[in-house]
Image (cartoon, rainbow, N blue to C red; front, side, top):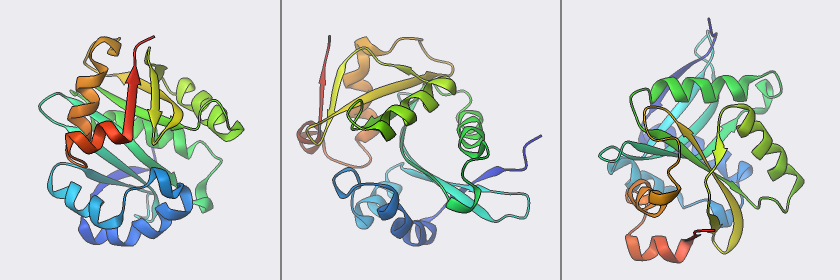
Length: 187
């Protein structure tokens, strides 16, 4: 039994968590605070990781396409005071349980394989059940790995990845802005 659980955060939580996100992510990979607030009105979800004493230990921002049944784990952070003891893997398990009944969860590993940190993250996600999607993926012009964890959906979503990404990003950006921000090419 886990000592952690997930609670859904609201707009006030996003306002409080966003400054922490600026330390965990590069400016180019992090939309503005107001963009997240607007996205939350359109289906984006802030998940807060809490321990048995209800102390916050991390966050995950999910872009969701309810109709398509996919969620993008866009931004995940575990707070420094609990890092390194399997908490990240536990958080991923809880997110998977939270999205039980959905087709699957997608995530982006930025600057992969250029940075050693990105390679470690990629390996971490693989150990937690995520696999690479068969495509070349760029985010803001930088090479990234696009990974997928099937839940109740197909094992391979590479044939429909453009449609899936359009659906999950719809709550955050318009379609013309999306295709300026991401690029997907089939191998």
